[in-house]
Length: 288
Image 1: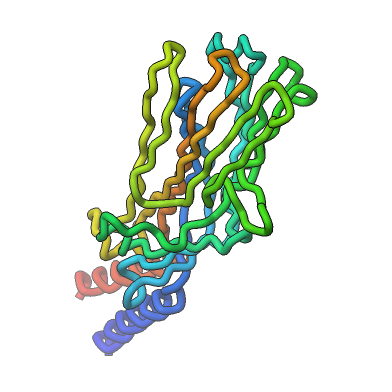
Image 2: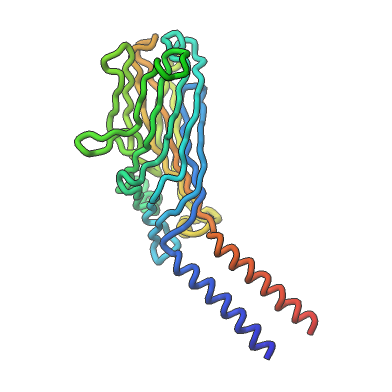
């Protein structure tokens, strides 16, 4: 009788795990990071973290990650970057502020595909890779709290109903009527290596690069769409500033979106209960 009870307990636990996995095969919780690294400002790297739910569509369920969809904003990035470069400050720019930077999946769906296909084929880009980065970058021209003296650059805008800018591609320009003009050439998200250039104070050109990736436990791409799978998508913006001493100041920023799939809290509780059950069974065997 005891043996039958133990077998029933194990079967119930296995069935519960199977049901939990099937019910959540298309949706996974994740911890996310949204970061921006600048080629100027000393290579400063600002990040924000958060959590969310991703919709995944792997081959045969959880396994190879084909399509990744972010359904809601999960991070908001705000930061103040002081400007210490004497050439730039001589032109009146004293700090840069990032206000409300976030991925905007509602704008164009937030779908990325084919993840595994782009990894396995060096020439294949993501065919679905447009998710605008919303928010503003304020170029503070005077030490006045960045309120009255600033150029405000929206990272993504619409042109004839189509998004352009950071995370989608296309040119965004501000300050065309003033002494300083800033042009931002955006690009879609990718898993490939992206690069931006930077003009140093002595006129030399340097480059900043970063690469995307996707893999599961033990670095296997075949288990990316499962717990402990991680994806890093990257996009680059090349910026040209005209009107600051030095005539044409080239710099850029690389944004990254990191999605790390995590177990659901209910599943963790279920696994914990199963471990306790196994311990009880083991103790019963010892007593016997």
